[in-house]
Length: 87
Image 1 (cartoon, rainbow, N blue to C red):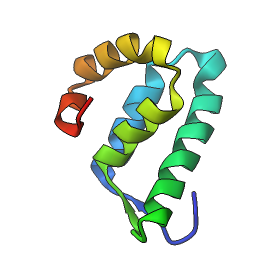
Image 2 (tube, rainbow, N blue to C red):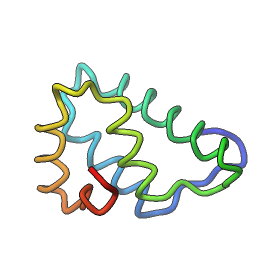
Image 3 (spheres, rainbow, N blue to C red):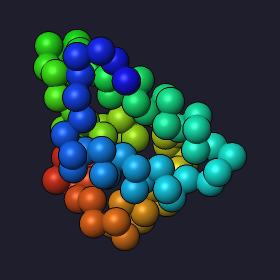
């Protein structure tokens, strides 16, 4: 985790829940890439807190387009309203 940046509790819960749906073989790579993307975004916006929207943005940015459909289904199953963020 980048120094000075904190995760909102709901953002952390969503992040971990989405990761749990990713196959074990890809999970650590996804965790690293999405968290880095999210922290970079938050830092570039001069913010210190990662919010649930940032997590959704990160997964959509890092996940190859061909996997967005299954990811959306997983998010719906988890109660994460990605449509609320424009996806």
